[in-house]
Amino acid sequence: MRKAARLYATKDKGGIFYSMGVTQHATGTDGVMSTANLAMITGKIGREGCGVNPLRGQNNVQGACDMGALPGDFTGYQKTNNPDVLAKFEQAWGTELPTNAGHTITEIVDDVDKNIVKFLYIMGENPLVSDPNTNHVKEAFEKANFIVLQDIFLTETSEYADVVLPAMVYAEKDGTFTNTERRVQLLRKAVKAPGVAKEDWRIICELAQRMGSEGFNFNSSAEIMDEIASVTPSYAGVSHERLERGDRIQWPCPDKESEGTKFLHKGQFTRGKGMFNVAHYIAPEDQPDETYPMILMTGRILQHYHTRTMTKRTAGIQEIVGDPFFEINPKTAEENGFSEGQFIQVTSPRGSVTAKAVYNKGIQENTLFMPFHYGDKGANCLTGGKVDPIAKIPPFKVCKVFLEEAK
Image 1 (tube, rainbow, N blue to C red):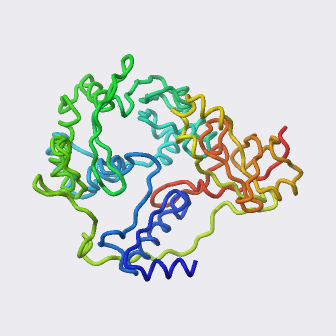
Image 2: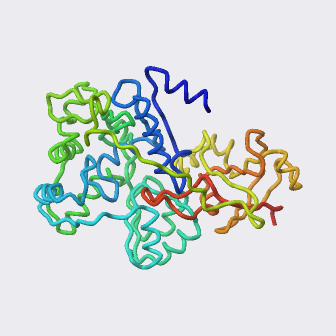
Image 3: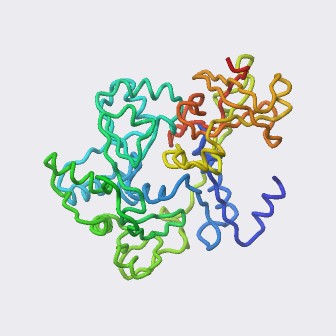
């Protein structure tokens, strides 16, 4: 670690790339802030080939966040509690807007469980697989008065839906993806969608119109991008027309003459001087004890994509990794009387899962790993606990468990 730190500090260029191993903890925000501290203290911010770069869990997470898919933000990270920003959007949209921030996914599930939220509209999300503590999610969704699901296939979550609205996949529609380097990329329709599937934006517009709302009379995703540009300073110079002719735009792009911004914070930060954030070590809530002496980590495998909404429909992938499994150090397995390929039952304070044991010498002793992709049989039946106080992300990487022979 000392060698790596000195190598990073002494080189002229060095970028930090982090992923879910940093964020999926109750202290995930502290972890990200610490990487930013490291980049600032070594002078690796505001220069080409440097910076702090999140590797997103899927395509267009950056773009979704840019467009306000965060509880306290409008487009371009304009804050909902800023009076000037609020007034601008109220004028643009011709309606009064709430001043309070919304809730995160984990908070919404708790709200449904407490009967604070009674109606759910879920787009492209499969919380029955992706959220922590699956049993808690099931109990909450059973209490909801009405659930609408908008997705490309039926999923585990669709079993709880009162209405399912068929959406188009990426290859069936026009739009944009924005990647982790803030590059806005044009997406063009390649194939015709089956049945009555529609673009996400068109479904929303048609619903809004039927409910009597005004301002939802868009005819194309290009028109929507034009509206985005009109209210979002960092996207002000972005348009489908520019992207169509080959402009490679990275936001901030403040006007149509701008070529965009290759790297952020050149010269100074938006706020002026950089601000360091001190993070103190906080141990995970789940600690091994006499009842639960082992630690489970969750994550991904190469073959499956997220909640398997698409990949479980691919025969070749299912043939290779069609069933859930636990990776375990051979020594740990033998000490507990198990052999490779044997079914074991793993239990946490939140539930139990049964799956085959697969040897992996790279796993630490008394530690298990399980992919989260597998729905009712998957790892999130076991996970849960205290979330990050800022991002509200669950501690998917630390879950205390015990294992026994499958019953």
